[in-house]
Length: 441
Ligand code: ADP
Ligand code: MG
Ligand code: ZN
Image (tube, rainbow, N blue to C red; front, side, top):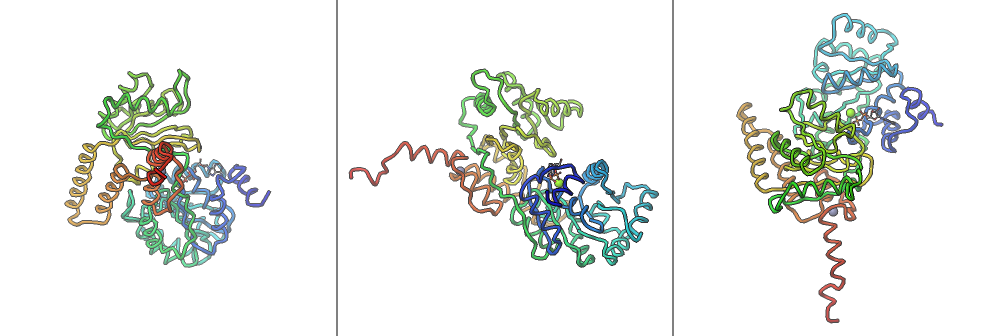
């Protein structure tokens, strides 16, 4: 066993790297001579990309993360593994804070991972401590998690992330690692620019996932849309011939009423389904999620509030009863299918009426935001163009996988029939073996 794998086992208890990509990132970070940019999907194991190098280096790794709750999860997890990690944040008691600062000021600090929010980075009380660590060469790496927060194009822009560029300037010689799960090309460029990454090594999971089959159905043309959805679900879960079926699925709806109606209709048609939305009591919501996680309920019919942090392997389908609000969010939501690599279906039920409504809502929201702040912003434009990309994905007669890859700036993938357009094209050419040009020869 290599020493790197040995360390992986010793510190984290894992026998192998999650992927070749994870291993490659960690090796690049350990070389320490270049900044590194990582874009891998949720659940791919990005945290390990700084946690393992942190354990293998002399000094302290500074981790920037946007939310105290996310930080707390990670710190707790590190403590379970006996890895010296902590966080300095606004909720910390004076005593604890003093202990941490004392350790950081000592000649050989015990701490390996120090998590902070971007607000804290900017706080004057913390600056001297950082500068001091840096001047004593005790900062091994700067890791910026959820790095898309730096971009106004991104879905959760955080102004404090913009201060991280200045932070870098104050920490000369400390290599930076930026990590994110979703990054269309423009967001990636923003990250590199704002964090002042110096010709970074990029590690990006290709957007294309060959096990996902994408299609779009015009909902208004269906005599009974619920029966149609039901048939799709039975097929996706392999429930034909009264077999018990495998896996589970998600139906996304825009409104609470939509969730209730679809769940009711599906249950009436014989598939166990539960609604999940913000209008339910917290207890009912948790119960719905748990029942679905445990396979007691096959289908969860949810608003987009469902799915953050849900990492279930055997999701066989994701259906959108209403249009997603952008192609980036659609990719993320539909991408919850097939995490185990097995064939899975992603379907959008498209309706032009739906399009008009969502279009209206997005413009209304943008106008409201502009009024509040008194000026227009890049992110306003992107909310509209990203929605237009979603509409084009549905309306355009072309490969769905190609549309997605293009949107994220990836090269055109080999769909090989993994979308309705390519499948139908293949069938058309089968049905017409002799092309018109050859006829009569
Ligand atoms: P991300 O930040 O990319 O969404 P996380 O870093 O939160 O992903 O990791 C997701 C899960 O994968 C965690 O439970 C983590 O412990 C686990 N994990 C990470 N690396 C490995 C590995 N090499 N082997 C097994 N599990 C791993
Ligand atoms: Mg993460
Ligand atoms: Zn295709």
